[in-house]
Length: 221
Image 1 (tube, helix red, strand yellow):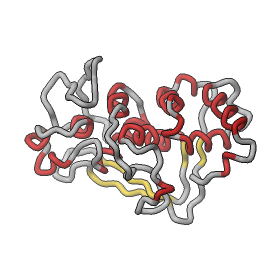
Image 2 (cartoon, helix red, strand yellow):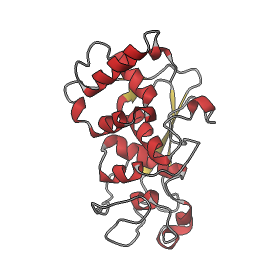
Image 3 (cartoon, rainbow, N blue to C red):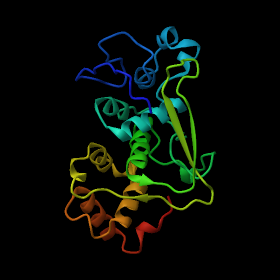
């Protein structure tokens, strides 16, 4: 991921339904992905108008960006309540999304939380990595990554550092609405059993275990 881009500063009253930048629209990937805006066709090249929160390239870019550092831009993106039933950026077991693979809720915002959490906390085996330019018409466009698991790959291993996890902004965002990331959270509970103490994720795991003693961790990713 090319991190050389300088992103515009967000106003504190940012809402996903309106542009919140202090300057005009640019061809920054963040600016291209946060909102659906007709002005993008003027500065984003011949493909500018196609970009927006639901675009696959934008979903991939934002998932990777927010997995590295959850900031105000990610907060705004996560507020997007636009319904989207296909999650194009989830790390799934095949190229076509089946009902069991459509995870992270049915809105763009909730799927971003899920997708970022996958990339931040989980390691996947037997993956097919596909890398390509965010905008193929722009020679300086950053590279984005699509990750597909092999049909015969193993389940992921998701872990955290108990000493620092309570200060992790992304994890706290996941725990604010566990339904967006339940499979990832449960995977952490399984792999970190007995090591999470009284952390917030540890309390979540204890609650899940108390509600289902029959093995809630057995579900497949």
